[in-house]
Length: 405
Image (cartoon, rainbow, N blue to C red; front, side):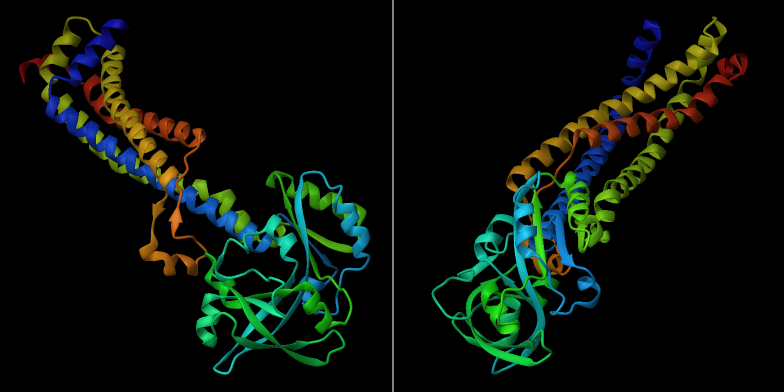
């Protein structure tokens, strides 16, 4: 076997130009493939974090039928008991109770339909990025009466600036229409254009006063230390409060669950497509090598080298060529990914387009050890598969005819 290993190694360097060309094609193919894998994984991770920290949280609690009806009169009963229970919830990082409504936000120039979130800024700081999205002003400070936190898109559409006056109109829980004037206390911009277009935030006590004249809660959002405990935590809360509708992020946002579960498999399909393209190059190179060495192979078979050894030699040559290029390509790809993982890949030129799909302009690629192992296995499978036809061509040579050519 040692002799076969040595022969195969020497054979790949007999035509250095061709071998190096093949190795380089595999190298750059694997480097690009791994970078693509890391880039897509970075997009998925950022999309997940953005939705969790800006909209969904790990667990949400509502009154029964609230999600279906979206009526302000459907509120969480026994709020104090629930919050006391959440203080003892395992894996809890923080929670925030919110008052919600839907209405119209208007200025002297325009109006838009919005979801109104009555929040406590001290609670939200612990579980969301609302304060991090601030671009101007403050996040619902105590410096003014009836402050409102709106997006830069809404401010532009309404033609208002910081400190400007806007009017919120919505329905009270007694079905009466009410309106109140608010002052723009802060302007935010998140990575999700849809969220920015449809959400505004006010102080929870202000919205409660206008909606019902008393404290009412429609939603409790919970952030956990580990997302893997979301379903378990939701089930635990449901057991203790069966009259409430408790859902994990997977139930609240099924499309996010599908993205997280299926995202890596989609990328592996792209890697396989790249390898299929490389496989034809490997096949062509090895077929040329076999045709050029037909006399040599015939001579080896004539002096007693059996077909198993001939086949092993051809397969080993292919594996050598592919593995050298593949391993070097993975190493190069990892270096590129690690660089951008720290520095971030700036896609600011496409920021508006990315925001339409909820992605940030700076992405941080990420590749796991599992990804590297899977890609390496796929490289080996590709090399062995590409060697089948050249190997069959070699072992079915007639020694006498091959020597005369």
